[in-house]
Image 1: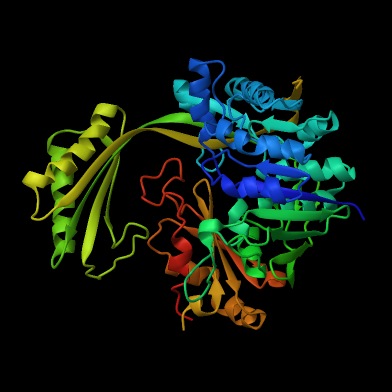
Image 2: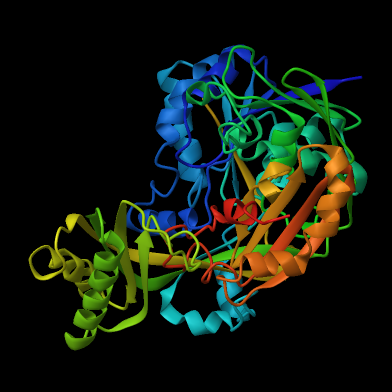
Length: 444
Length: 99
């Protein structure tokens, strides 16, 4: 039976680069897929694009593509990535010029049409989860991008693209698309699409299935995380797949690493919302068949519900933060006093904050339980939400003034203020997004 | 005995909802975990996160439970003022559950 080898070259925008190079060199891959687009990235990139029509794609695109393109081209490994962010066409042009520098003749496809800002602003859609309507975001609205499915990537591959660069696409669809292309799976073959989505979901966070984000010394030991190998899926035409990694790399592929990733960011495992289908992982199984080889079976699916999820970015004011540390006996009491002082200072100096949060790092910052512990040191952190940068800066300034005005022995103060970009979701009928594929050809 | 002695866990986030898996190390422990680690016990273990609703899903073929906790993340990763805005550390809090 025919099979295809897919590798995951990145699990987020800032991920390590060498594991992808290792995969390109030694993975004997048909496809190398880079998932690089976090929820907020497009909203940020949209601003970059407005300032410069050739900008708005992933800032690490050059570095990643330069590292893998020549060897991938030599090995006939095709590259798929959502590094196009807010500007897939500019990203494709950039990859074209990198290819020319290397003397490579390539077809680079750009998938566009995920930008549905005009649809979202004209429809005043209800906001999922948080409630309210899009119109309430007013002129703070920055971007609206639909999670596209596999179809436009399949179209690009069918047209012979060596590199496919997209904006917002459902992460598993980046991997599902080459399976559909290679095996000719129908877009209503829900069982195969469900299994392909399961494989894509396992791969989309790269190292998180090969032992990254897993180690707990003494209970879950993982060797050589500094040289973690990224995953490979060997997928057969019937959908049966094995997850593995390159020999000699760090990490581990076990039933346990696959199970943790299988449930990562899943709600109802029988109803995983995707643009191409509703996937069902409730009958999935994993089986260790050899060291670092785990067989994946049982992904299923059913017809999609006709909706596409749209990620809407908007400006959400400013967040100011300040931190300072206390040590030794009484550290917690001095930290608590410091928090009281800063809260009072923010009130009496009239800093207009819609929300303030205070934590004692080392005691209660990750979980707000009432711990009575007396750690040898604590770091206080105060964060506040403001409408202006000036007011956000006041939060950190009031923490910093604790040096000379606060409790004894405060050290290591730091402060930041950042423009907050938030994301909400709306659902639109799928026919309102019109994916397009454009192909650029370079000659060597 | 702690849940940590028999199970491992990973947290994911979508919007203001956290999901925390609980996966038995050994298949033979799954039925006991399923019996003891109810949605109500998870809600109590994570009572510092208000307000929360906990829904439990069972995956017997994986020896796993999946807990979906709404309203857990202070508005979600793009809004929350928390240090760990994703709530990534919650799996470790849940594994401290007494069995």
